[in-house]
Image 1 (cartoon, rainbow, N blue to C red):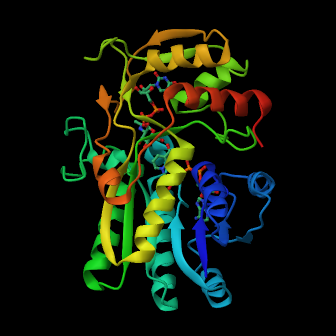
Image 2 (image 1 turned 60 degrees about the vertical axis):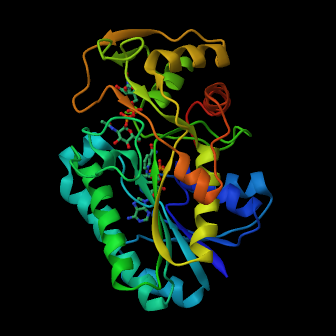
Length: 336
Ligand code: NAD
Ligand code: UD1
């Protein structure tokens, strides 16, 4: 029996593949390399000294999926594949709805017809919208998303919830990630954004390595301890380990469960800049810029449900997140 990992060549997927292999699972990775390179999977094998199966396939390709399910004995799916750039999703909503929602529906149809009914899905804290006050709890109202990317996550949560309601043989685990950063401590795999990074940590690390001149800090007049935005940064390896716990739950019992994966601690933009400077010994050039549209002051999780029900807690602190990001970025300035 194997675990199928869609989007397994990407940032979070590749780190999860390492932890799955280390935990003794046989894995099959499916990816169309839209936002990744095969080199990441080569390095997953190198880190673990274990093998994995790979199919270059699109989750919207029903025939391709059917062939994989016919050939392989897939026990459960961890579903990372999707498009994730918030700004781009506003320019290309149809592509986002097609890829993320259409792709997930096609994947679930293929799973159902193959009799594989266990899925762990990559959702996001973005489904909490902007109205709820942190710490965010799974029981809070979701929706009110402000961009097509966020809306795809909200709809997919709904689709998977409806799927379970229609057929209680399914095991669905929805994981709401907060802000994943960091890299594997080997420095061999990490985040590899295309073009100018949208997210804070890759921008900081590219300034540190000399690829970007200056970080723009989007707003210093928020109601936070230093006026800059506060987020719940989580080490990608902790996040990957959360998937192993979620998978164990899905393999053990049917149901539809949702968990926050975060640390429960919020750090500001300037806290992160300072922590990165300490970890790297490099001064980060930054300037204060206007607020970014759609941003909120503060967003962090209440991670207690994952602790109680999955036995999972994030263990790696901000210093380790910065240290590991720096090792990856400095040793691979141009990514894979
Ligand atoms: P990523 O872009 O690095 O990985 C996604 C992978 O999916 C890539 O390898 C890409 O090539 C592949 N892919 C995309 N569309 C595909 C398709 N139609 N068929 C097959 N493969 C396809 O992104 P990531 O940061 O690793 O994120 C993984 C998942 O987690 C995504 O669903 C993302 O929305 C979600 N998520 C990410 C974050 C974050 O900050 N990184 C936060 C919350 C949720
Ligand atoms: C963003 C997405 C969110 C997604 C998440 C994880 C938006 C509005 N939200 O969240 O949907 O789930 O990434 O991928 O894009 N910042 C700067 N300068 C920069 C970049 C960021 O000051 O160059 C600040 C932001 O204003 C924010 C913090 O850093 O306060 C974190 O930003 P970012 O890394 O983009 O994550 P989120 O906005 O939390």
